[in-house]
Image 1 (cartoon, rainbow, N blue to C red):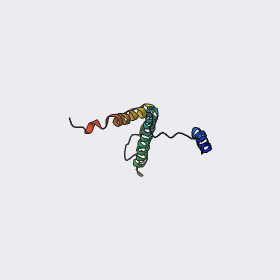
Image 2: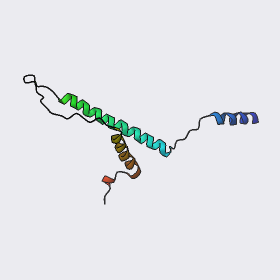
Image 3: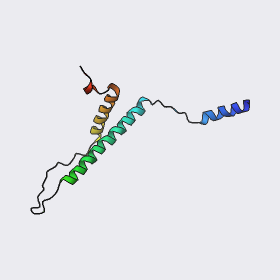
Image 4: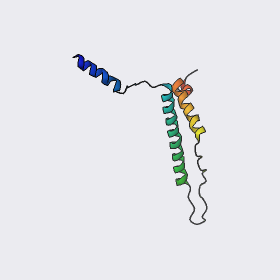
Amino acid sequence: MTDVNKMAEQFKNMMPQVNFNKNGYELRTEVLQFAQDHVWQDFHAKWAGYETSVVKDPKTGELVTSVEMPEVPGSDKVLETAQKFYEFISNGNSSNKTK
């Protein structure tokens, strides 16, 4: 029986340790990834709307509707969105709280 315990102890050190709690860096990384995905999904939705809403009049060749092309999101937009998500996670939705 002691040989089994010794072998189990040896394999215990080789096995990966599972940690279900994430540290602050891991949480911020996930929030940043979520914000980046959100910002780019928003951009792609606006881009699809831009492509489908701009049409030419077949008689005059002029644009029937005028829609501005969406701005490509940069790192500032991603960080701004991540900050909003992080504040929501930390503090809750302050706009729904009653005074």
